[in-house]
Length: 254
Image 1: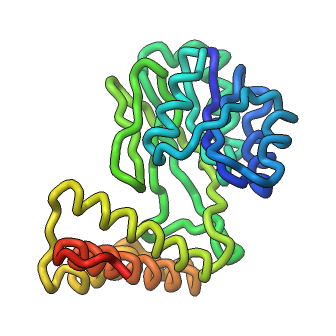
Image 2 (image 1 turned 90 degrees about the vertical axis):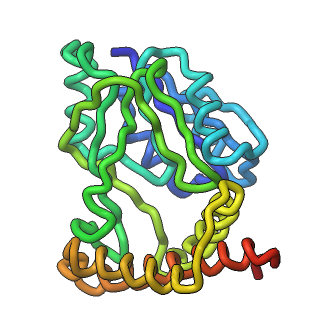
């Protein structure tokens, strides 16, 4: 298995070295598509031998598909700059590279585990958050709206057990701020696709999001961080539908 690791970046100096160290010895090629970093991201990428390309922002889907198009190997690992392959996951990928048993599958999924407020989150809406990240380049492409892109794969998908670590948020304040950004992007994309929301939608969807994450999926087992995750996620959900209602009324979101 010849493997290209593909990333998109913007001012990821603080995270990128960790991500690239985790694929050292696995990646036959590293592709980094950057949308205008002003910190040391480029220097870090080049220190790992990455093929560095600048591209003005095309959106998450456009940037990631561009990175895929630049890959020269038949297999791709799509990695975010704030992620890291755990040791068990690295071992599984190495075994695939060396063993040749990957021929019957077109892609592999893996659980993603988030580091949040000083601990790994193992319950609630955030885990196992199984994602397809390792796949044949000719079998996968990204689709979706302005945020929360998804990978579509043609063919059978096998499951890996090792975690993909995610260092997503600095703290609860960062979580809230990004939730507001993602809510706006979601609402704009939903409106463009003709989605509508009734007057009770913000509160109904928000209440369900909290109930699912904190109780039904046992987010309470993660202690105080589990409560914060459920509460902020519910807040983001309420905001998404409030912004959608604002847009559908013809007003500009505030």
